[in-house]
Amino acid sequence: MAGKGLRGLNEALRSLSLSTQTCREAASLRIPSSNFTRSMATEAPLPKITTSVNAPYRPASTVPVTIFDFPSFEPQRLESWSAKHLYVPLRRDILHLAVVYEGDSTRQGTASTKTRWEVSGSHRKMRPQKGTGRARLGTRQSPMLRGGGKPFGPRPRDFATRINRKVYDLAWRTALSYRYRRGELVVCADGLELPLPQEFAALVADEKDEKLSQELQRAFKAKWARQVLDVNEWGRSCGRSTFITTNYRDNLFEALDEVPNYGRALDVEDVDVKDLLETGRLVVEREALRELIDRHSSDLVTRVFVANANLPKAPESGKVLVE
Image 1 (cartoon, rainbow, N blue to C red):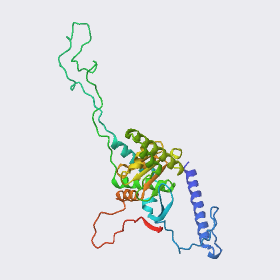
Image 2: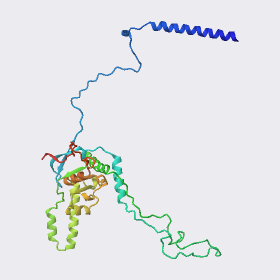
Image 3: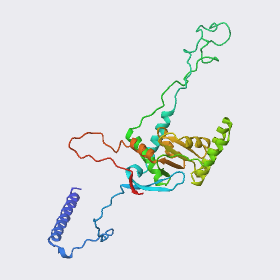
Image 4: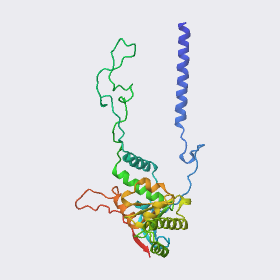
């Protein structure tokens, strides 16, 4: 056994010496560098691409906005507004956060029930514990009895949630930008009002009964509002319209109150992000649009004072291009 092991070891050493000698001879042979070529199955020649950096890409900083006349819908002038105001990329997540925040803030949370400790009446034991053959029973305020307290009932609470102000302001401008890109944002000149025809004044003058006159006025305004909205394709068949003004306008607000299926009118103070997304068309007075943007631009204007520093200026909108 020992002889066989020794013989195997000698053969292994002999073969090892031969392999090392072969490696030395192969290493002594050098391949010329000029004849060396590298080839791989996955290798492909690089395409010859010539690029010129003479005109780098710059996104548009302004967008055009046409100011229309109401109700004729005639263009009056063309203005340039900042892309950060009316051309913000769509963010559905931010819009969802803003709508949920507004909905939670409007919940009353006043639902309340009385527990057994708040129901009025005596708290003595209704009947003896034993001897009557009936179930044991405590006070008449027990939740098992009619008129007793309610266990685990609703209590007054606040449903309001929180959202960062900059995120909320971005949601406002995102909603306006979404309506602008879809062509559903109509900006009208200042003083947005529904003018009534001359027949209206003649109708009111001929009517002597004051009560009947008021009914005729409301009916005439409703009919006139339907005609104006249908002609401009802003009415019921086009998904209704939302009118936003800086203050209360008698004819416009009263007429749209009579035809809620055709549109509605809101003051700037009563507008939410949800109102900007609900109806098919958004008709905004120019000054009202500027006021909405100025109120919700906290993420564009820095409030940090830095001495002797050139801070970026807030984007400007409303420059007249063509009039």
